[in-house]
Amino acid sequence: MLMDELRVLLTHKQIQDRVGEIAAQLDRDFAGQSVIFIGVLKGATIFLSDLARRVQLDATFDFIGVASYGKQKQSSGEVRLTKDVEQPLTGANIILVEDILDTGLTMNYLRNMLLTHQPRCLKIAALLDKACRRQIPIQADYVGFTIPDEFVVGYGMDHAERYRNLPDIRVLPPELI
Ligand code: PRP
Image (cartoon, rainbow, N blue to C red):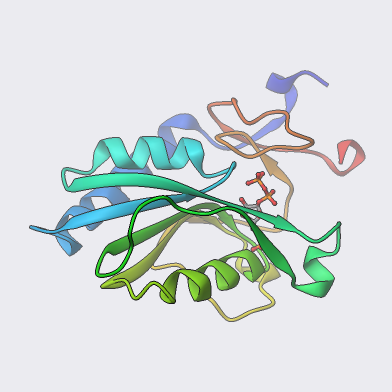
């Protein structure tokens, strides 16, 4: 199946409009302050790069890497760090940036780990929220779109590393998963 035959869930325009709204909210919430955007590799890279360019705050950004143990992430809940951040976080305003919040296991792990650095505050920005899939009661402070339980690709999100470069968010049909 060709990429442009996959059903579009969210167009690039819809995404950009919503990213602009979230950026405006961040500008209001952190007016006069500095923030550190921390993107979770790899899916969040596109969202982070768009969001960081829309805010008018004094901002830096960094990246953090996580992996599941084997393929057991959803059942075991075990997540491990593959790349740590490089900036000091004590006293910082952290905006943890994710492409998608699914079971919540990754975000729960990262939030607990980052809080050990004693930041001034830690907020979560998730472009997509598959709220119906949550296993751990964790919510993002800034959510782009709440979506149904479908396999989405594009705008940073992959299937076997493909499709991350699509400008829209599209649905991969079950027969291709
Ligand atoms: C995705 C996404 C989140 C995580 C969310 O990452 O980017 O990090 O899954 O799932 P959870 O809420 O169930 O923990 P993925 O493992 O696909 O890696 P990638 O970002 O490199 O594509």
